[in-house]
Amino acid sequence: MVEMHYPLDDDREAFNGFYHKHITMLLSIDGFLSAQRYECTHEARSPFLAVYRLNDPAVMTSEGYTSRAGRDSVDPVFKAKMTNWDRNLVQGDIEDMDVADNGWMVLIDRLSADSAPLPEGFTSLSIVGLDATIVERGVMIGQDGSPPDISDAEDWIVRRFRPVHAPRHPA
Image 1 (cartoon, rainbow, N blue to C red):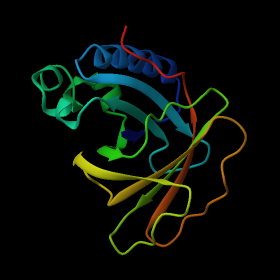
Image 2: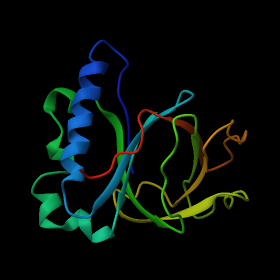
Image 3: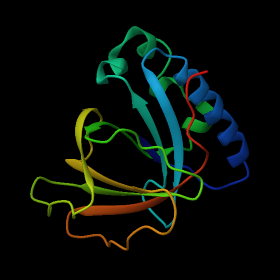
Image 4: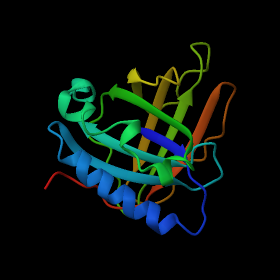
């Protein structure tokens, strides 16, 4: 999962074009199974999210990935405007995280081991690599309707997302 803030100014269309090409490149790397981008429905520190499904966490240390992707693969024009940029490699008991056009995703980030446990109905995602900026992430996905109204709790951050585009898969 890659999350960030990007200013909503006049180059947003160009940024979306860059990101579309970037996802196409990532999906050409052996082990990338799908990709989907999301945008928060409310103000947040990192309102943009990209979820990549991999066949194994080792993909992120493979030659195919390290030679073509990562932070250095982002166009410097866009990279200069990206802030609050975190990459957390997660694993959990969830088949996929694809969200339909009318669907939603809620993420809860536990910031410390002392944070309250995830609420019922959330799937736990363990942090297994990359930046590891959180202790645990919980996810709930709905394919229509509205997400549950869950507020931030002490040492939690709650974000509600809608998809920017349909799930993409390798050609």
